[in-house]
Amino acid sequence: MKKYTHEHQLQADCVIWFANKYPSLRGTLWGNFAEQSVSLASKKLSLGLIRGLPDLMFRLNGVFVGIELKLPGTSHNIAHLVEQAEWMQNNTDIGYFCDSFSGFQYLITHIVEHVAKRRMATQGTMLEYYLDHDGLCSPLLVLNFCRSRKTKTTTWNKNNFIKFVNDF
Image 1 (spheres, rainbow, N blue to C red):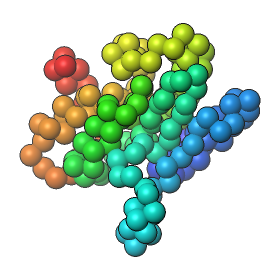
Image 2: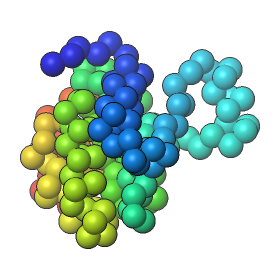
Image 3: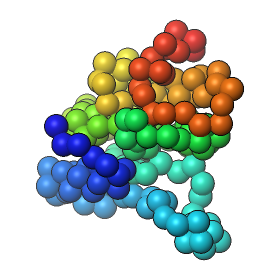
Image 4: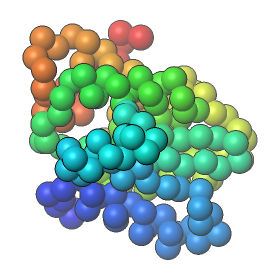
């Protein structure tokens, strides 16, 4: 398994894999590209960048998917995680945090092969499929975890979120 030091490396590998695996779906997966300096972020916000959008978005046969990439062991602002999780909950048919290349491959493959063909685009339906994969985490689990925290930051570790699976 490849070791990533920056989120954009994982994102690049995901996008390249998708382009090679599904060339006929060109244009259905696109990136948000929000990672940048504070001054550039301010400029992009003034041009329409929306805070909380997932890193990658995918639309196929009317199913809109948000994929927020995270690297295990990286530090994140709790308020920003909540913003990202709420955005995916409120604005996507399917939304997941993804912290591995294999998790991304699993999610996309499942959507292409099963979900989009049947138009089964509900968060509740999808949850049972993806919790089994180590690289994916439901926004509901992230929200429940973040709302239980008293600190302003947390380290990304999917195991922290799993204990909240029975809370919703």
